[in-house]
Image (cartoon, rainbow, N blue to C red):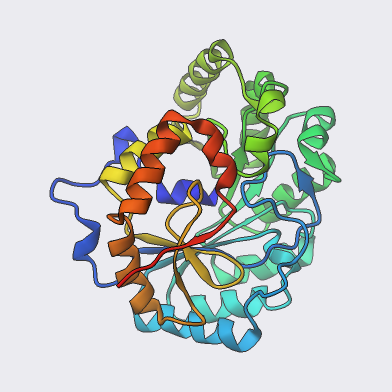
Length: 330
């Protein structure tokens, strides 16, 4: 759900006069640190699993982190793959926090024990997001191949006990959406800070498995009624965030109003946004400041505009999201 950091809900749209080109640097970096993952999820937007052969080296990571600090980017969210599999995860987090950068991490939780939770608490993360796609082992483990619901819930418990702002991310599908209410209640009982959800994104493996994943319109109607009811029930006790639009509606909005953010994938390339295949820069070839300038130009590139409009009318093109296309930008 890191991708949600690139979104605005109708209740949280940019202020009048917002223009992403007016910023000298992005306000937010979404960083997919690695591609390795210990699970095999049906809906993985990044199609993670095995490491990419050309992921950033330690020295390249250090340079990137220093550039983030130099540009005074206030907020970074780290995901993967599974970021806790990366040997430098904690060193990166310590560097950012030592420079006052607000930091979020998204993980499946399977590598979080009591000691790791305490280590995260000391770093003062803005939040740790744990993916929990079901209230029962049957649905959770169907969604997350090799996953273990008990391990995931135990990770949530370790984090909340350590005083970490812990958020649950729930992706609804036709086989788990009926467990929404139960999972929200479970989250509250565990002391979870926030519950994030919304329509499943038709990207990556989710696009490939769309027929077995996508809920019906009737399912969604009940889903959003449940969310409204639970938001009212837990108002002031647990935050419930939900985004009511699908990826097509998102792209329509983004084409008009791009976010002041960058999405960096494990090999150092910068994508415009998860659902599109376009790459606007490369940390091995461009400085972060140059990538930001290229990102601003890229959203008005004819190839991007044409492809995005085609996606809006032909959802099958979303299957190309991870077939990266390098843009030619002057």
